[in-house]
Amino acid sequence: MDKLVIRGGKRISGTIAASGSKNSALPIIAATLLAPDGIFEINRIPDLQDVRTFSQLLVYLGAEISFDDNLLRISTANLKSIEAPYELVKKMRASIYVLGPLLSRYGHTRVSLPGGCAFGPRPVDLHIMVMEKLGAEITIEKGFIDARVKGGRLRGTRIDFPISSVGATGNALMAAVTAEGTTILGNAAIEPEIECLCNFLQKMGANISGIGTTTLVIEGVDKLQAVSFDNIFDRIEAGTLLCAAAITKGEITVTGVVPAQLDSVLKAFAEAGCQVTTGADYVSLVAPDRLRATDITARPYPCFPTDMQAQWMALMTQAHGVSNIIDKIYHERFNHIPELNRLGAHIEIRDNQAIVHGPRTLTGTKVMSTDLRASACLVLAGLVADETTEVLRIYHLDRGYEKIEKKLTSLGADITRDKYQEFS
Ligand code: UD1
Image 1 (tube, helix red, strand yellow):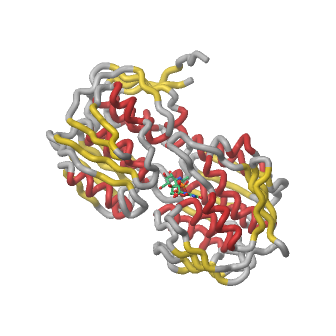
Image 2: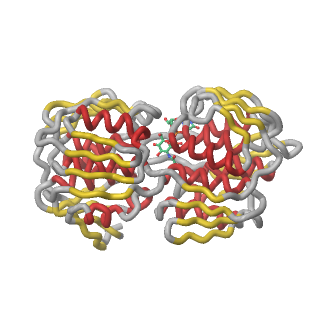
């Protein structure tokens, strides 16, 4: 297995381009299942394990795919299966995104239930609710969601989400765009990745209004076509790189971003004492000598993202004072805390609230993570820790960060990727 070896204490400084977004790439790839002919060309797809796993799923279904230099070419003209198998779904929960498009195209699909995840239960009941409302009959058997539509075509309706869900909103969109009649989605997620999916579907010929708001109105169309499209930037990668500069008392410019989509994170940096400036497509940050403790609560967009919570916690270990961190999306997303404490942090958990006492001197050792953003948090801690930090099990990191050690090295970090052996 691979590990990252980080010799801490180097200051991050320089300019770096943001990669394409993972969380928009996955639903976009799923949406290609909706066009029965033609070849899609999608730019700025990050070269990540999750993208490769999702592509594997589409190849299993019969898609033809090539992927070079962040350009994904894909044709779903000759599909041969309507079943997403356990072996692929268990690798990545986002596989549930094929439910809507396959049901819409074929009137029948079988998708394995994804199972648990490292930071608590992550049900798929809303995805199922959406398909039922659109007229599907769902049975759960032998660990699979079996979804069928009598007559073959879904029917538009009104669906109000009890809580904001990125995945269920995306699935609902992909199911509704070719349903008969009008679908109204109330309390829809408004994350930029959903807006991006809407724009992609529109370009394919869908008819969606209210894009960017919590009420989406979809008039079903008969057919969608393959198109060329540019993916959006990865706001979580950008936020993580900003943290790398902030934690090492450095400075950074991240290019190829839409600063407004980082608003809540930039406000938190400013509150922590960082000097933040933005232009049309870049954001610059200069870290202060003395970071201030800052409370954050992760909530749906446009609030502070749950996917930045772990990285923020690493940063707060270096801030002066006590910071309180709450995650309202995944209440138990705190696997990184014991590992940060092993590096010397002082973080307590009380009633689903993390209390970070800073600043603390961190000292490198071997640490291990159980999910993607926790890995990023440990890499950030390693950048500022004395001596050497080894971050094990970085396959989690490789799922979601494109060339992360190369990017950080180009900014002045001392990081290498090595092999190690796990004992079973
Ligand atoms: C997406 C992101 C993930 C991010 C999360 C929240 C992708 C591939 N992943 O995940 O990185 O952390 O949004 O911003 O884009 N829920 C239910 N029932 C459901 C579905 C969700 O109860 O059927 C709950 C979840 O447990 C969670 C909340 O709804 O508490 C929001 O989850 P959701 O927005 O659906 O997350 P994902 O789309 O899975």
